[in-house]
Length: 243
Image (cartoon, rainbow, N blue to C red; front, side, top):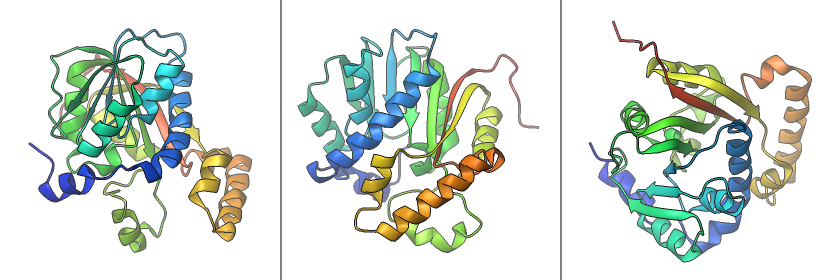
């Protein structure tokens, strides 16, 4: 199974130098989430699935998260940008078809899949491949859900978000694919990320900051509608079978 041709074409030239700063700032906090959830676990080999233009790998290399970092990506433009970064601890970088991970079973201690699954047509297929090649996994997804999400389809489609999650629904997906959730984090985007997201839209920035105040005051809501949700998982010893 490969990604649809129109989707592959859309991502092939997705990355250019104009968005590097924006993606680099966002990646810093994604990398910090990875490090936070990985405390007390040492990963000798790490693969990022859907590594974009390499910003997360770059931060993890700078912070010596692992001496053996690897990446796979469907975008040719992303691959070229990563090569030009000369990431110190990056050992292997491969173009892949979006589903078949080109490594043997149990090749990696950890697979990272950050802000990828919301773009994937057949996410269960990719999840099974991730499980096949790894002992542990870290997934992060944006929480785009709202009660009016069906009225925003053009907005989400404009940047390739074809799957919408809540934290609970995302954990249901993972558990139904036999991942055990070890740690989880509900978090709100950092202020410098928000300022770039809302550039020249001061009213939108104020609106989001007010929403953040409410979420922090009501922890239950924070578990439903954070900015993003990140989990550390491993393979379940008690496999669930459909029917």
